[in-house]
Image (tube, rainbow, N blue to C red; front, side, top):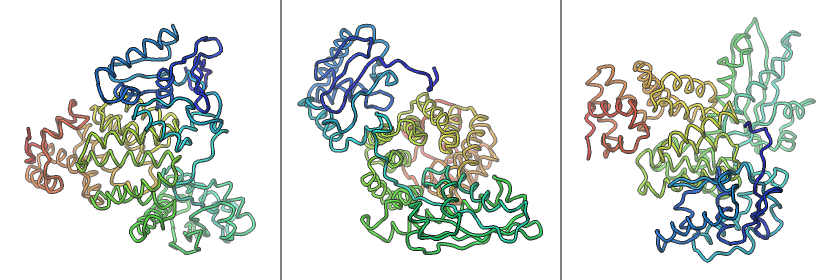
Length: 555
């Protein structure tokens, strides 16, 4: 059944005010027990309606006795099945690890603000009290369960930019719209980034219809940055003189000339537009990181926190990495309903574990799961958040089927989400589906407008080519990635694998020494135990190469 088709709502749940859990219009039952209602609410408020059995046991029955909690959960589900009758098997499914409610068949009645969250349900279990207190202190985190009309818009957590139509100077009649078209194409390219909010081209055009006044742009569009300039065509060559401005202070961040043949400028995928987009992306990232390093957290603007945090996170220096978490956490604190901020914090914990910096892998993995769940609580259809949920399932939980589902769903919602294409490609590489891996990674590169994560894309292109057996291409991309960022461990392993399969034995040993220099506790057994591709040829290929490179075998 497609998303657009009508799905019968078999159960109604009221969260604000008196808690009600009852059958829909033609389903005549109502749950009255506090723990029965709490159990359904815990499932209904979880991403995809799924909670682990251990979470439900601890939250509703405490930690005193695991066996007792397990039996209590089993009895509660049996009681609910007796009350619901045949509806139970349609609404609720379970495995040895999880319990899932089909949230597509749930109607949330009432509306936020019509009473206290779960009024009257105050179970005396520490886990439930902590969860209940967390929702009551910030009920906005579950507003996305209700209609959009009942929600306040999320506070912006990324910088906003306007690309103003470029003025044409002394143009021929058939060139008159070049400046306007060029600004629109730059807008389209920038809008693919999760780290920039781009004002629509129509809005920017309307504000500048008569003249370009920075104060008016700032007031009408509420932007942090803007780009403006002029275009002229001389003997078939287009010349764009552009300025990027800080909209608040009026400071010119750069003034540059971009030039190329008219045909190149008229191509939406041409170098001219890509060059403009890269210049904007680099500047926003650089400005944010510079401010983050020179100012304390309270002095940083909201829009600088997340960009700086992500930029520092991907520098992969331990000090920068630690600082990046503080920035992203502050972004979450200031914008608790920003789904992307929660998702980036989840990605921070994934990278902490995957790069060997975590001192408590179980705890950090749990935090990654928790933050991406919060992101999807806020915006269940956010392609970026679904992508990060896929990353968590792939890299930490090694649930590759679930990860594939998340990536596919993300691309269904937004076919231009570059990270969805990238991580989906990596998943196909891990599963030895090289052709699909390369196609998806190439799509990701085409759609990615910003440089701070460029090394990341090249690294995964290397992995994709490894899965096809094209070791020359894999080595080229691995080298290109390491030339920008030589601290990404996966790229070092990809390079070792490519060199080994090309028969370049001396270089393999040198590359192995470089990996051990960056991760002294690297072992082949450790890689195979933790990597999601360990049961596929991709993993075995890496294990053989790591052994040849002198990486210790381990336990």
